[in-house]
Every structure is written in C-alpha cells, then in structure tokens.
Length: 420
Figure 1 (tube, rainbow, N blue to C red):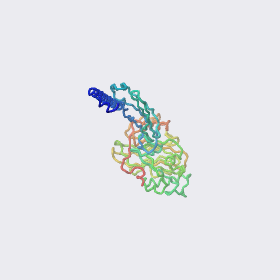
Figure 2: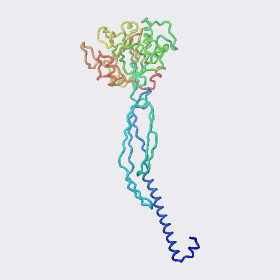
Figure 3: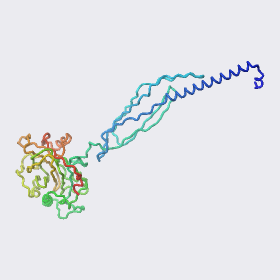
Figure 4: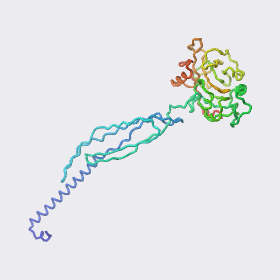
C-alpha cells in the first residue's frame, strides 16, 4: 500500500494504524533493553574469580652459606571458591533461561614435595558459567633455584670451609717448598731433624706469624672448633686444604690462631696426643708439646713437662702417648691468645686429640684411675659432633657434660686477614 493510499483512508483508520506501529516499536525497545541487561548481568555474575597465587614455603635454602645443597620445599595451593551468587532469571521475547547457583565447594589441590634443584612452574585455568560455553587457559607458576641452607656447614676433620662463629682459623704450610712454591733443597723427608728444626724456629718465635713467611701457604683457611682427628692418611690435610696437587703428604704444619674468650674463671691445663706433632702456646708461652715418640726429641725444644709422659698408659691414638701440659689461669671474658700447631713429619698416618682438665674439676675415671676429660672446643658441642667423635674414637671415652668453651673473639681479623 502506498503513502497516498493511507492518506486517503478515513481518520479513525489512520489513528488505529499509527497506534499499532507505536506500540510495536515500544515493545521492541523494551525487550531490547531487557536483552542488554541480561547480557550485562550474565558477564558480571559469571566472570571467573582471579586465580590466587599459591603460597610457597621455602625450606632451609637461602644461599647464606657458600656451599651448595638441595633444599626440600613443600607447597600447597588452595583454590578459593567464588562468591555465592543468587539465581538470575531473565524473561525475553524469544527465550527464557536461568543461571544456576554457583558452587560453594572449595577445591583443594595438593602439590607434592620435591628436592628442588632448578626453578620451574606451570599451571592451568578454566571457566564454566551456567552450562554455557567452556574455556581452557595456561599459566606459569613461581620457581625456585638451588641454595645452601643456613644450617649446613662443609666440615672436615681439620675444620670447616666456611667461617663459623667462634671458630679458630687455621693455615696450612709446607716445609718442603718456598713461599713461591719452589722445592727446598736442604729438606729431606726421612730426616726428623729437618722437620724438627723448622718447628723449633717457630716455637722459639712464640708462634709469631713472621716465622711462617718463608714456607708455602695454602690459599684458603679452615675454621677449627675441636681437635679430635682419628688416625687417617697424611694426605688428608693437603686434600682438605685443596692443595693435594701441590703438596706431598709429609713435612707440613697447620697453625690455628686466635684470641679466645673463656666462659668462666679457670685454672686448667691442656692434655693431648699427636702423630706426629701437637704444640699449644698461650699468651706467647709454650704450654704443651705432645709428639710421636720418635719425633719428640726433635720438637720438644726448651719445654719440660711438669709430669712424666706415660708411654704405657691408655691413649686415644694407638702408639701415641698422652702428654699433660702446664697449668694456666684465665679470667672469664678476658681475651687470651691461643696458638695451636699440628704437623706431620715423614708421612703415613696422622691423628690428633686435645683435651682440657680443670684443676678443681670433678671427673669420672677409667678402670685404671685415669680421668675422663672433655675436648678442647670453641663452641658448645652438638649431638652431631658428639656422635662423629665417638665414631672416630670407639675405644676412648670423653666427658660430654662438664665442657668449658673457648670461643674466638670476633674482631675483624679472622680467616685469611689474620695471617697477612
């Protein structure tokens, strides 16, 4: 029907047609608004909650120490439930649909423990809304790398490779080489007097550092807490000081030095045995020389033991007699210079034990009446150290309860700086 045909119709018919078109237009607009609102609420209520990053709990790793070790890391992720949503029903012109209540269940995902050596993570995500559509996604998770735990110390019988609070730094010297690493022509390994003459020079200097300047020196120190070294091969010392490729296992000496701080007033003495040489100086004075019988005459020098050396008595080291040192008085908290030397002459086997006896101390005794004494130590002896010592000396008993401690003072001149 053309426009001029409508205009020629009666007026009531015109109004009726115009009213019909207007009502239809309004209905379309209203339903369109409802449809837009339905779409808006659909995406607003069904939007997936943000994925929560799992909390990872690191183990003992931290790299605080210098060595490397795998740290056990346990993680657990918990996916949080989205907010509970009411039903939404939308009535439209052409369709009716209802959005179901969202689930209130909490999904819990367990992540297994692992010994972590490299950092890598992965994840996946997805969404589901009212049964309409589905999706998959990918993601990445946090990772962890290798580290060294704070409690881990790389320990050797001659000391730890990392600096330990209160430990006594020690340096390794080779009598057979010059400072520059050249062979010494007048040193013969099988001659005890060649080893002894160099030890005597060091003792006569009261263990001054200048007495060591002419000898080859290992670049890195070790940090001593106790001297309890069971019989082992003489090449173990060069090996632990990382100079086994430069030093033959004979004619060497290790010098431990530091200012210690006694934990109480004491009148005490050192008691020990050494294969081949153990010497202790306190405040620049010789207080103990304990050596293998064949080496003793060449290293004892001017020192005279206050008590005779019991060559036939019990000893921690087979064949190594126990020697008792001089009595020493110290005050709690005062700084006392200690110098300890241990060395090997011809090669073969080495072993060293250094103990403490307090003059008024009460000790258990062995079957022959000999006192059961504690080790000299710069730290409180841990259960781990105790078991290690007991394993190394299965036929000897030490005192573990009444143990004085001699920590080294921290004054900025520990380790290599102490010897420069």
